[in-house]
Length: 293
Image 1 (cartoon, one colour):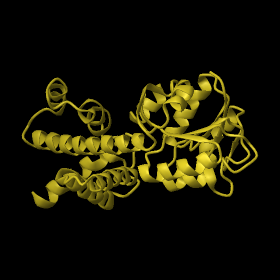
Image 2 (cartoon, one colour):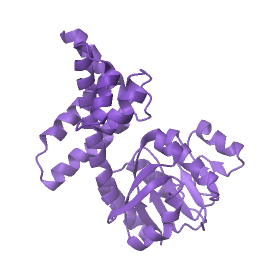
Image 3 (tube, helix red, strand yellow):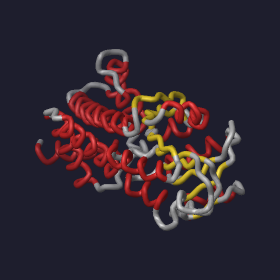
Image 4 (spheres, helix red, strand yellow):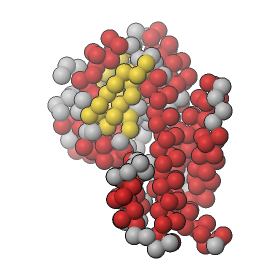
């Protein structure tokens, strides 16, 4: 595997992904505003700083909360693409807005830097085990040239269209995830209040037409044990669903289920707190039983 990587955004998920690259032997530098996030990488002797401007790396990989954060990290005053270090490509693995990504691509192209959007699905477990699924938007030649860099992090990486297509698909993926998590929690709550065993319900659903990632992973690992620690905040989940709402409007598609999902998850965020884990939605549903029952 040729080339080196500057990984920007080594928080809970990004840190696990960057570690996979290091373990695969990829020359690595990391940037993050959090000293705590950088500490494990400094312990490994890797170049690390709050900003990427002076850090090495032929390819920049970003894993940040929003498109605005990505642009600042790349093209802000201390941005990774503003210094003397030459960059040949950027792979943005953030869940961001397609329009902002296309605009960023034009700015980077003017600097001679290629951009791909490659958001991922699979959660913290996927990041730790290198089994994420990447949805890639961008030039086919650029994708093939850098596919090997995705392999330590992703069991599957597919080019799904031009620049921005990966972020479009990720937003729709998270909409589906939102609907199945909410509805699965509702079904589990109804069944348990009617005397059904929750583990029996999940086993049956996982073998039938009710199967979903929520049934297979989120409920048995994070809801039933009441750890509520899947690893995705309500704030960022609502951001992703909001992107899907905007995409539906752009496409001229009436999507009442999407609108309802967005409203439900905004209420969960406002009632539970923006930093709460998405699997904690069960606590909201349980509170409604007490309020309305």
